[in-house]
Structure formats: structure tokens, C-alpha cells
Length: 391
Image (tube, rainbow, N blue to C red; front, side, top):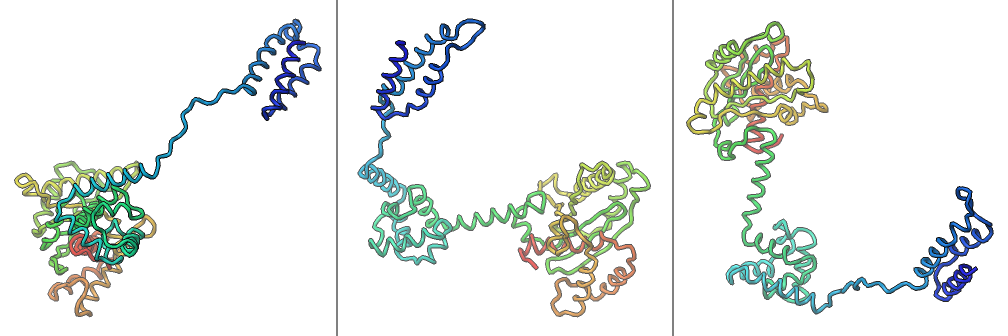
């Protein structure tokens, strides 16, 4: 009975300390009402009570005699310490700029309106308002250190703002970087922007399984040449590399010279095994056009042949339905009509060639998509990559 008395003491002690003891009492009642707990034919009382006594004493010790935690209390820095840290950061900020630079930065912070401050990307929104409100409440900024006292400004933010005020051209550089990234999404390989801006004429080339078509346009969007050539029938016969070389070399000899040759880049999936012969044909044709048209690449390393994403052209002319591009025949027909009817058409067809182009267009009973696409690709190239315009 010694263990019962010990447990009773623990329960009483627990009641004084305010700990929850309902669970030990329930266990006691359950065990005291049982004569024994069978375990392999041996008395449960004899086997379990010594362990029970030890367990209950340990549990009671945990409940009633808990030691105070040795974990150190979390210290909260005082306001004085925070102020000292802010002062050190502000002092370090002042040391990063010369007196002339500090004067230039403070002039902007003390004279610019909220709207003028928003011209700097880092000062858009609430930050510019906070600067103006801080100025009205506490007077003009006397040094760069005081900028850290403005809400939403910490040392790193203040440093970035000061650098942006001193070098606003970095914003233009970022815009140029964004433009180059956008350009890189639909034109490969990467090309210097100034080379694109200086272009005088391009030849836009689109090839399929049966023909190659090209459109030669100058930077005034005048169509200098526009034609197609039937060259092979991939579906009827498999051609060797030497035949490809002969065919494409013959076609290139008929093409006019230009600053850039722009090839259409299709988005056919290589995962479709049924399209593998067509993909192979496109890759061989593209590789040979790159090699034969980049005549000076070995000497100057400058790319003269570019690839333009097909879907980018489709989106530019609103020809996309989901992921599928529709025919551009109607748009080309409109461009031909506008060249005659409008004083300033989007694309200009020379009078001595417009009749031949219209006859070629009207005689087309098979919807020669390569012919339409070569013209639309040339227009999209100028409007997106050279002129940066949207229609």
C-alpha cells in the first residue's frame, strides 16, 4: 500500500500547486479496481507494481517539482541601442558620398515634389509621400543620415535611393536590358541593338516542305522583291545532303543582298514521331541557309542570319487562335489594297510591281502560305525589332 500513499501525497501536492491531476487519478482508479493484470500466467500485480511505483513517482516529480527553465530570457534591445545603430548606419551612409554628391542628393530630396520623386523607381508609392511628409514635419534634410528616419527607409534602401538619384541613367540601362531580353524571346541569336537600328534592308525567308519564299523590304517598308520557288517534294522522296546543298545554293543565288536575312523559326514539337521527317528537313534547310548566307561570319564573327519566332509574328497580326496560327492571306490582300488606296499605306508596293504581285496573289489557288508569311514576317521584324512600334 506504500505506493498508494505515495500517490495520494502526490495528488494532494498537485492540488496545492494547481497542476492538472485528473489523468493520474483515473489511472489509479483503474489499477486499484483490478486484482491483477495477466501477463504470460504470472501475476500482473507482482510484475507491474514496482514499475508502476517508479513511473508514478517520476510523473509526480515532473508535475510537482518542476525546475525553473535554464533557457535564457529573450532580450529586447532598448530604444537607446536601436537609436545608436541607426546613427551608425546614417554616419556610414554619409561617408560613402563626397560633399558634392551629398549636396546633389539633398537638393532632390528637399525640393522635389511627390510626383517628381516617383520618377525614380525606388521612390514610387508610399516612399515619395513619406519623404514629403517628413520634410513638412521636421524641415529639410540636413544630411543623408536623416533619410533613415523616414518611414520605410533603412540603410540599404537609403543607399540604393541615393545611388539612383546620382545616376538616373541606370534606369535607362535597365530599360535597355529589358528590351534586349524581350527581343531575345523572338529573335535568335542575340544581336546588338544598334545594328538593328541601323538596318537598311532585310530579306525575310520562309520555307516549307515544297517551296521557299522570300520578301525583300527596305526600312521604309517598301517591297523591293517578293517571290517563291518550288524546289522539292519532301513527301515523295528523301533527299541527301548534297541535293539540299545544290538546291539551296541555286535559290540563294537568286536572292538579293541585304543587311540581314531573317528565317522563320517554327514551333513543331520533336516529341511527335510522325513529324520527325519534316523536322529533319527544316533543320537541314535552316543550317544550310545559316552557313551559306553568313558569308563574312568567319572574318568578323557578326551574324547576318537571324531566326524569328513564328508565333510572335502571328500574335503581331492577331492570327493566333490559342496555340494555332491561322492563314495570313486576308491581311496580305488588305495590304495590297491599302498600297493603292491610301496615301500612307502600312506597306508600299512599287507601282511597276503591284500589278504583278496582285496577279500572283489572285492566281494562288493553293494558298501559298510561305509567300504570305515571308511578307508578314518582314513587316513584324521592322515594327517590333527596328521601330519598336505596335499595331
